[in-house]
Length: 178
Ligand code: IMP
Ligand code: MG
Image 1 (cartoon, rainbow, N blue to C red):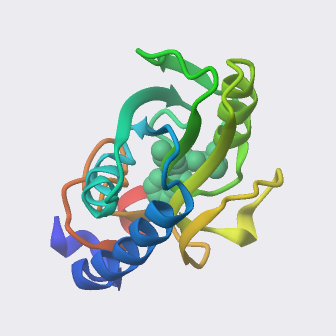
Image 2 (cartoon, helix red, strand yellow):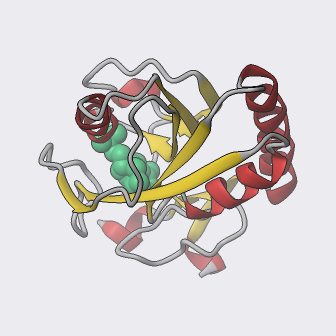
């Protein structure tokens, strides 16, 4: 896998530091509140589990699975829900954990959908942000790193379901997907 990576953008240590700060901030902001973290499968799994460990207040967790890409590297703009929540979120403080915001289409769709369930609040914690590619506005309360417009893999991010288990975030060599 490592030989398919052009450049490591964020090491395991850099990611850990960033998530530590984020977890601390979230723990302060949501102190005394009924927080539920919702992970977007499968990309957010590594981020979510590390973030959960840095949150020092009581916190529930749930998952949703959506599909917007198939095996391609650009968003089709069509979002499908593959797995819905197990819990009711009405009146809860909901925080969506996502791996990366690219066009923003997936998160926008998800946020509109979850708003319909009447949470008390709905915010986003996202590890990576590709601002250059944005098509719809997303206001993420917690953002890790702004990244350049390259196709990234590792730390949960995949190309055709591969590379998710790399412990760092790297740029995938173009010849792999071109
Ligand atoms: P968006 O709807 O275009 O914002 O895409 C969001 C989803 O696309 C993310 O949750 C990722 O699963 C996937 N994605 C976007 N950019 C990348 C990337 O560079 N590498 C891997 N997956 C990506
Ligand atoms: Mg994702």
